[in-house]
Length: 254
Length: 316
Image (cartoon, rainbow over all chains, first blue to last red):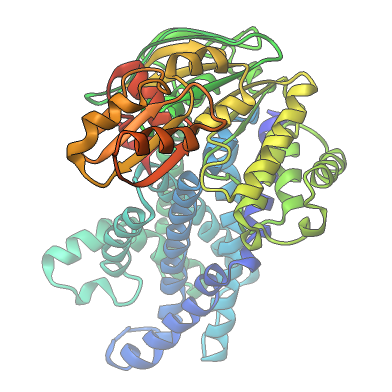
């Protein structure tokens, strides 16, 4: 157990130390979210009706959750790259705790998710976003966001260990993340969608989490979403963490 | 280190079809074979990365399946694809590996420093490894395999793709490790590499060991150096073969206008061949003396040229 903790921290440190040295990754965590905020606020925002909220208030919780999903994308690509470059072979030949490579990676993701979320909130505030809640609710929202992100990292970590090439990881990520994030309440009210999409959007965990964020940060009247979001996050972790670790044990590089 | 009856299939492709090996403590076994022969698969099984479908193996006295966790403390692996993190510096890479062996940060850094010095990477130690040359990366990869001073070292094609100078450097390093008592299992596609480094060679083809022995024993079976003579006129091949008979180990092989002759002695072979052919009135375009290659080993042992097997995993 002690080894699991220390090995996990070593791997988490490795993933964070390398971040500033890989400009393309840093862009993905900083500039890309800002671009999305500006795009939605100023290009689509004027045409989207969000009763009860200004669009920027409606948008920020949604886009922050979407951005978490994109962070998971980077996890899938990164692990797949490690697999291909033989680093996973190296780790597996070391006497380290078996889950540590994935646990360290997902732990590092919590830090990068916190960084992107902070950048998004600051950008939001500059263009008119404000919290309609007290400090405890804001912090609870942040905690929920990071918990969901942690689960999502495990899920895409599993994808990264499963697929054969980084290109495949890219496609699988793209095909799953786009429908999940866009057919949800992240950018438009679900009530504006046609019936089949609405049915999907209402059960989509992204909707649950985004609505939970709005209830915590904007005081939206949907308290039970918060527990739904916590349960979703825990279920995702409980399912995908063991799957990803089992896959890691069997992983073959090249 | 011993292995017996190792079998491994990938789907319908049989990568290993029953491999037996034995490596004495402190010696070097070279696994020699073409791409896809199963060399990497053997290394992956012996380093606990892959479970065999059948068969058993022990390394450093530990069973690769049942005592995998303890075994990992006692082996070092340096791969064909230099497995270092490109965005970390040389020192950070070695420190990370040291800490993953359970050492403190300070001890791991100290050991990393030592290894960088030994591998002449100290000046580059604080640079991201993506700026390293191929040879530097291989050296760092080898250094990473040595972090815990393992008594058994696995080297998967350690010099494939390196320039001659880096190759020579790496050979010298490996010889130094062996002199210090490390047991080494290395795979290679190059006969000269196996010849220089290995105390014993196992020739692998299509997932089997097809021959084994010391490099000298193997070379005896393959024959010595070869003269390759390109004739002006292919019709003269028979006359040429007759003329060269006194020089040759065995009847010369003829393929169109190309004559291949195994010769007893390197010294004077070219001059003697040219004289004999001139006396016989056979004109020649070109003559080359070359050492036996992996292809010659395979030709001598199996009657077919070394060819890549179906195991694409090794081809890359």
